[in-house]
Amino acid sequence: MTKYREIIRLSQPDLKLSQQKIVFSCGVSKKTVNKVFKSASVKDISWPFPASYTDAFLEGLLFPERREQVDASKRCMPNYEYVRKELLKNGVNKKLLWTEYLEE
Image (cartoon, rainbow, N blue to C red; front, top):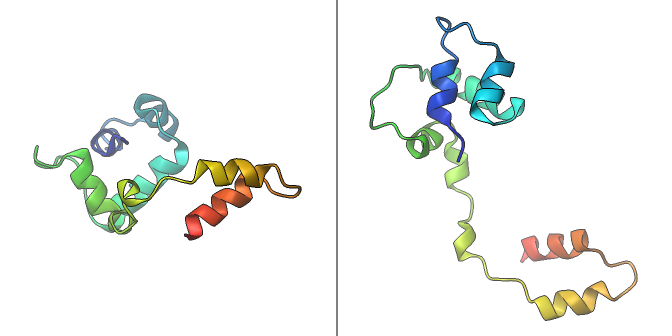
């Protein structure tokens, strides 16, 4: 899971850390750090915050649209026999089958 608490903590002006140092420290991409910075500034979330603010709670505050996505555990498993047979056909690749699977 992304370390939202740590990203926001390290972004404080007092620490004077560059974005690259935050990326290396948290083990995430620059894009993730930028998204967290932008969302935190829009929603006026800054350090320090209560200890009850876990990374999962912060994710819900920063990115509420992610919560609305379909839970992965509710998806059915792909029919691997069908996938195997389809991959033997000309012009069929894994990306095409993945797209079909997501549309179901």
